[in-house]
Image (tube, rainbow, N blue to C red; front, side, top):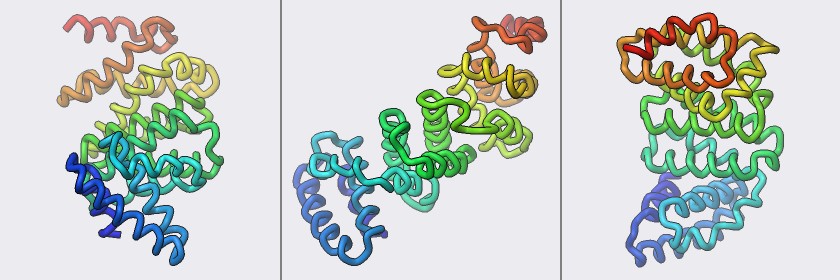
Length: 250
């Protein structure tokens, strides 16, 4: 495993000679591992695929575009992003960004168990200690809702409300960031869902509380989220419009 991760790190180098060496070593590793364990072979494949985000002209990138056809590919990307917390942050970030792009382009084509795995696992990173990982997790969740629907994430608003009830700063930050992104892209979907579940009303109650938070980022995320509903103006915002305007005029 460590040798595989090292190959990813080397593949990010701008040095063409290093890229060529990585290409040669990775080909050799794949040839051996493919006959030893299918799972590990796939693991190598998807790890190397990520380098195309770092250097679109790299040799590994040109050779590994075919990996899109591997059924478990996105599950492995998810595993690296969510589970390998002891690895270099850059490795996790490339995996997460690749996953986000795949969700945007191919989500409807993914098998149901793959979609469920991505959704469930990415929520593990909402409270990650690393800010970049938290933000990327929020972006992936936002993309799922955008290309699919709220039905892809049943109980999403209730889960967010639960997460906001903690005292864990990283979890609150990641949750508010994700909420803000979703409100930016899917405010109308949330407003429509409120007629069914009433979750938006409860969520707004929590967001209004964070308008007075001592953390500037929390205040900005909360206000930014509420701002996305000015046009559709749901009932909960109409009922609290005076409070909203007081905050806006500060």
